[in-house]
Image (cartoon, rainbow, N blue to C red; front, side, top):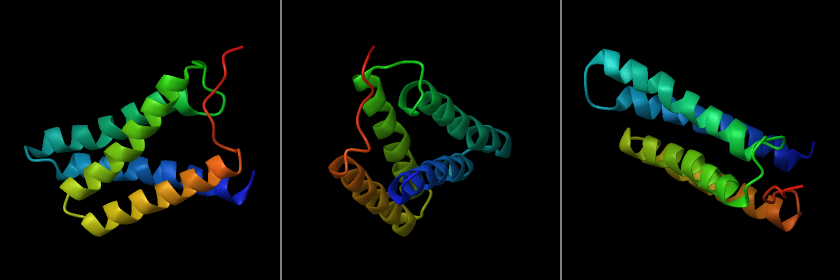
Length: 114
């Protein structure tokens, strides 16, 4: 596994953590916030595993791209709304640079249907 792919994996883990932070920072009772802090990253992980993971069972380029945008973009939005604009900007910048490098190296591309 290349360094850029390892960074991508770490960014995916950061996105899950950011979604948990965003869920916990949501307005409402503690029970709702705790539920969101668990459900948001769990839903993102399930989507990622189904559509965006290297061995995802669904080989749809559109679903692959949409999942990446939803999970990484949602994580950036969650951090920003939770009052962490610097962390949001760092995550967005790191994801953009990593994506550009992986695409340029031919290591990140939508799945192809058999």
